[in-house]
Image 1 (tube, rainbow, N blue to C red):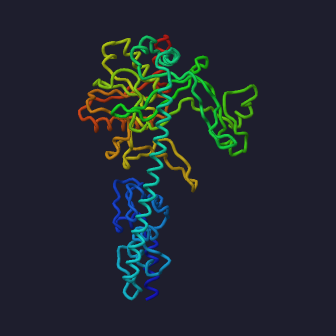
Image 2: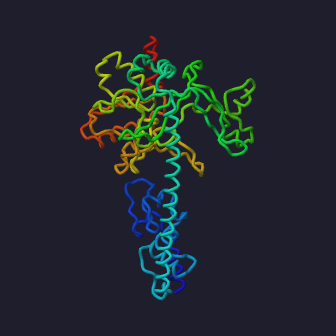
Image 3: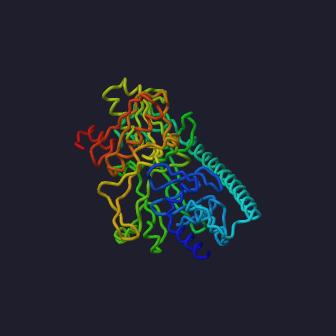
Length: 451
C-alpha cells in the first residue's frame, strides 16, 4: 500500500495550479494568467490570487503562498501537510480523487479541530482587516484635512501668477482665466517635502509659489489636491529645477541631498553617473481615484473635455474660446491627474503583447512586454474620474509624448468606460502630433510656430 500512496503523492506533485484550481472550487475567469478572488479560507474580496503562467499562488490574508498545487490545496482546505493523512487529503483535492483505500484517514476529531482552526483564522483575519481599515481611514482623514488646509489657505483673489503660468504654458488668456477658472488657486509659499532627514522627519527642500487645484468626486466634494510649483524664469515648462538622489546613487552610498542646483552640485560627474535626478514639480495629495480636477466651466454642462494634465485642458479651452466662444462657454474642461485615472481600472482579461517591445526574463529569454487591457473592468467603473450620466458629448485629449501603444490602450479603455457609464454618449479622442502634447501644439500655433 505504501507504494500506491507514494505514487498517489507523486502524481499530485505533477499537477499544475491551473489544473488543480477548478478541482478545488476556484473559478478562473477569462484567459489571462492573473486571477484574484476571495480566499476560501479567510474571506475578503480579492485576498487570494494565483498566476497560472508562473504556477504561483498567494493569500494576503494569511500571509502565505507558494508555487505548488498541494500547498494551495492545503491552505484552501485548512490542512497541515506535515501530517501524512492531511497531506494525502490535500493530494486528493489536487487530483480530484479520493485517497486510496487503506490509507490512514483524517479522524472526525481532527476534522473538527481543522474547522475550529479555520474559524479562528477567519476571525483573526477579520479583526486584522478591521484594524487596517481603521488605520487607513484615520490616515485618509488626516491627509484630507491637510489637503483642505492647503487649498483653503491658497489665495483665490491674487492669482495673477497662476494666470501668467497657464498663459505661458497653454496660451490661455489671463482674462479668460479670471472669468472661468474659479477653482484654481495660488499658494504664494508652498513647501516641497522630499525624503527624510537624519532624525527621520520629513525634509523641506524648497518653498515657492504653486498652483493648487482640488480633486473633487461626483458630488463635488474635495478628495485631494494637485500642486504645481511655478518658476516663470525657468523655460520651457516654467517650473523650478529640483534634484534628488537617484536609486543608483542611493545604492552607491552617495550623499542623500536634494534641492535646487548649487554652484558645484550636482556635478557633471554626478550627472554622468546618474547619481542625482530631476524631481517632479507636480504632486498630488489625498486621493485622485474617482476624482477630477475642474479647470474651467460648469460640470452641469452636457459637453466635457477631459485631459491628463491641467495645461492641456487649459490649452484646449483657450483654442475653443478663440474659435467658438459659445461652444467653449457651454463646455466643462477638466483634468484627471494621470492617464490611469482617466482610463479607469483595466479588465483582468484582454492583455496583449506589445508589437515590438521585449524584456529579458529571469531565464535570459526575451519575452514581449504585456500591455494593459483596452477594456474596463465592469465591476470597477467607479475607480476612474467621475463621469456624470447627463454628459452627452465627451472629448478626450490624448498625449503624443508618451509610449504610443501603451497610451492607445489606455485611451481605448477610457472611451469604453465612458460608454459603459453613460450609454449613448458621443465620445472621441483627439490626438496631437507624435512627440507633443496639446499644450505644446496650441502654444506653438498661437506663436506662429509649427509643431
